[in-house]
Every structure is written in structure tokens, then in C-alpha cells.
Image 1 (cartoon, rainbow, N blue to C red):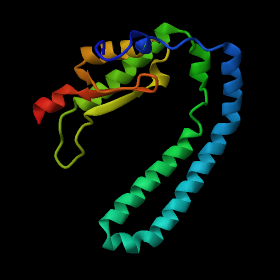
Image 2 (tube, rainbow, N blue to C red):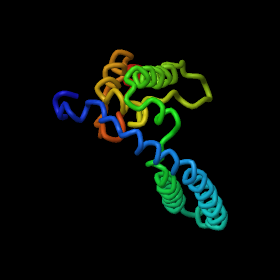
Image 3 (cartoon, rainbow, N blue to C red):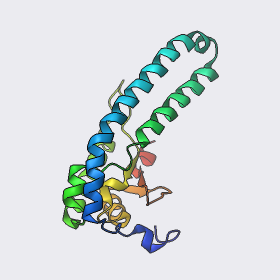
Length: 176
């Protein structure tokens, strides 16, 4: 973390003005339901198109992979339309370091519990990678996420701290 990154990028984000958050929250109340309806409509259209394209996919694995990538990318773009929205906890706890510390502790603890779960036969393997979004740590910075994660056995992956902190469960490489 210290080797390849500027220390300021790992610090907490500046506190946003209360009026700006209130304005974003009011806009979120109106905009988020619109994005949800749009996401469902786009997913339904892509599903119907996928039913017709299923005949081609039966013959071509490459087409099927390309269509699934298109499906994921399109729904991801629609979901990003709501990326500026502000939630009620964000509005209430902006600048509250203790709140964000407990939030990071909870999120990293949940990922640790999932990653360290025993492997069950005929079930999906526990996750070995995770991404902690900026929304979860903006009040304490990526440095705190890294410290908590490293203490619980995670390793840092190449990360853009202005968006997320990516982690790798180091015990997975020892078990494999």
C-alpha cells in the first residue's frame, strides 16, 4: 500500500456539505425508483431477446459468452445511473468517523466469515476476492480498510481507492 500509492489517496474523503447531501438525498428519492424500473425493463427486454437468441447460442458457445457479457455490461451501466444517489445513513452520518469504522469492521468481518467458511461438497466455493466500495469507507479512508483487512488475513489487490478497495483471501492460496 505504501510502496505504489500516494498517502493522500488512502486518507478519508473530505466531508461533503450538508446542503449538498440533502439535495442529493431529495433527488435520490425521485431518481432511484426510476432507475429500478428502468433496470427491470432493460433486463426483461434482454431476457426476451435472449430467448430468441437461444437457438444461436445452442450452436455457438462464443455467441452465448458474448451475449452474457453484453447482458452484464448493459445492466451495469443502467445501475450506474444511480451512483450519485445518497442514502439516509450517508446523510445522517457524514463526517462521523466512528460510524464508518464500525461499518468497515462489519463489512470486512462479513467477508471474512464468508471466505473462511468450510468448503461444502456440491456447493459453491467460498469467495476468495472481494471489493469494498467507497460508500462503505469514505469517512475513514482506504487505509483503515487495509489495516482491518490485513489483520483478518486478507491481502491487498491492485486498487483504485477512490472507487473501492480490492482484497484477496490469502488462506485460499494456501489451501489450493
